[in-house]
Length: 255
Image 1 (cartoon, helix red, strand yellow):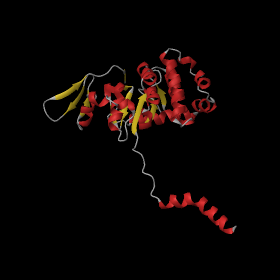
Image 2 (tube, rainbow, N blue to C red; image 1 turned 90 degrees about the horizontal axis):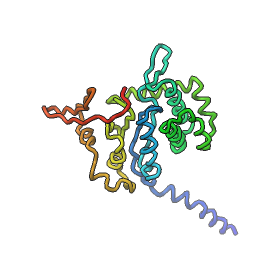
Image 3 (cartoon, one colour; image 1 turned 30 degrees about the horizontal axis):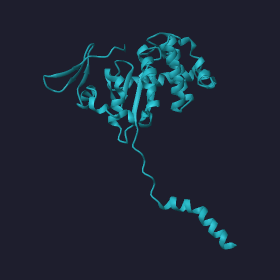
Image 4 (tube, rainbow, N blue to C red; image 1 turned 45 degrees about the vertical axis):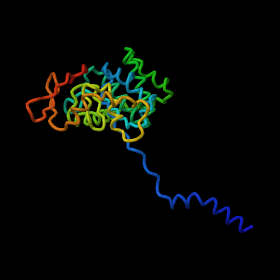
C-alpha cells in the first residue's frame, strides 16, 4: 500500500520534474510594432480605422502585430493651464479624451479597439454624437470611461498622448500617421500590411502571400537611412548627391 502511494506521488510530481529538467520553450518571433497616431474626428482617420485597420483582427495579421493607438493628432497645448486645443474643435477633444480613457480602462486590445472602432464608425457616418451607444453595443460598463474623461485624470492622459505624439522623429505632418517597426509610412499608410509582413520574422499570416512582390515604394525611402526632410509639398530624401527622390504626399489632415 505504501509503495502504491509512493508511485502515485511520483506520477503526480513527474510533470514538475520534467519541467525543471527540460530547457524552456523557445519564445516565438517578436511582434512588429504598429502605431497609429490619429485624432477622433479626422475623416481620414476614422475611415482608416474602420475600413483598413479593423481588418487585421479578421485576417490574422493581429497575431504578428503589437498595435498602439495614440488619440491626439494635430492638437496643441495652450496656456499655463495646459488647455488642449483640437483641430476639429471641442467635440474632438472630448472624443480624443474618451478614447484615451478607454485604452486605459480596458488594456485588452480587443476590448478597447472594439470600442474605438465603434465610435469611429459613428464618426464616419456623421453620428458622432451617439458615441455613448458604443458602451451598450460592445457590452461594456461605461463607468470607468465616464469617470476618467470627466476628471483631471482624463486630461492628463491626453497630455501624455500629446507628449508621445510631439516626440515623434521625424515629427508627424498629418494624420493618420502610421509607424511600422519605428519607421513612418508617410503617404503609403494604407498599405501598412505589406510593411508588417516584411518586418515579421515568424511564419507569415496568409494575408502576407503576394504582398512582397509589389512592395511599397516608401520602403525604399525609409531603408535609405539618413537625410529625410520635409517641405510644404513634396517629401524629399537627400541622398548626399544632386539627385533626390520625391514622392507626392497623401491627402490628409495637416497640422
